[in-house]
Image 1 (cartoon, rainbow, N blue to C red):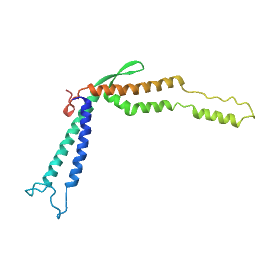
Image 2 (cartoon, rainbow, N blue to C red):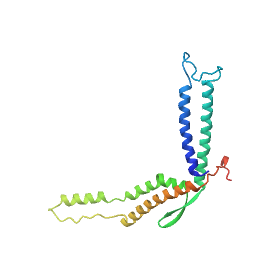
Image 3 (cartoon, one colour):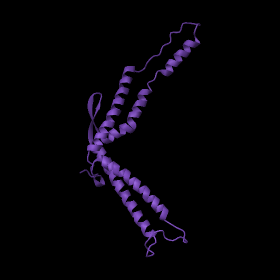
Image 4 (cartoon, helix red, strand yellow):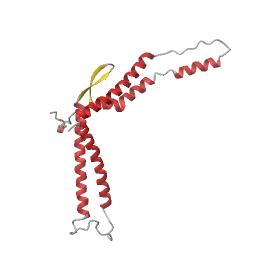
Length: 187
């Protein structure tokens, strides 16, 4: 089974679990003056039996979901793929790609965007306006960072983000799901 197939099965399992929950909730109990909606021939059949069966089916689905998710996570941790960054191929685990996509690229971008001169520029402009005519102010912004380096890093992050999306699409379609070893024992 490919990673993409396993992820689709997870979504389908979650959908079926929602349906199981609705069924169980609807038929879990009824007032004594209402007849069994399934009109059983024997008293131990009908709604009690259907609810037990659906409950068991839901528990089985949850167990399957847990195993699939564990196997997906394991596969993502141990499978290495190449992703282009700064014109070079970099080897990363699928897990690392996902982590970068969901969080790390955003955190890095926020750090580089913190290298911002706008506050200093505003203060210089205010000082010039305040002192206009009184004396000749030669206030300037002093940069404590390399502007070109900041822009290059932001460009690299954008490129990495784009390349991660491509690498993940390819990996999800091509990589076979690996079974996670039980009890933490490596195969």
